[in-house]
Image (tube, one colour):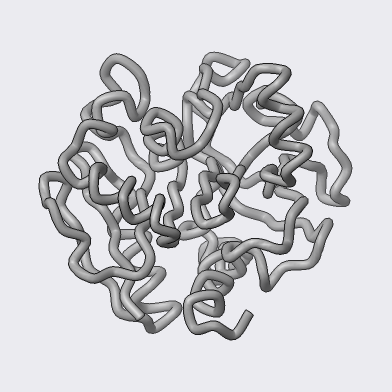
Length: 232
């Protein structure tokens, strides 16, 4: 099993993801540079957080044109496992691999803190170790995490159970006071129709060990490992 973490100019969570895979999961992992035209035989691709290309134009808008993204799109369309975290989620949206867009946080400020997520779909390669309604404590760190999609698009997400994570209170209730960025319908993470591509704003790699304040992020990474091994 081999994970690949893409490094774009401006990425700053690539090493966090690399360490989580290598040191916590004990799995093989390599860095993939943005101008590569090969995924180096990786079975799972991680688009990490950061500020790719300085977030010029829009978050993720320039990164979508990186040479490696052509390979990521081919990989995803063929059923390969892809996860985009924070800026990685924004890049997946800009690339058309996931529907919707990101707006500025409702506060118009950068937010960096732990939040609570409710698992609304446990039947995915990224949440198979979770239970429906389970609450995870995972941090966010972004300025543009206010997810938006058209009314028709939202209904489609709901109908096809593409909403994987929602912001919630510690008890799993959808409370406006616990929606940190104003995201539509409390959406914190979605998958594509096939289910092999996930985008999420919270950072599971920053909550993969107890010393970090939570290890709930391991549920996401361990789910991917089990899926790739064919356990689930």
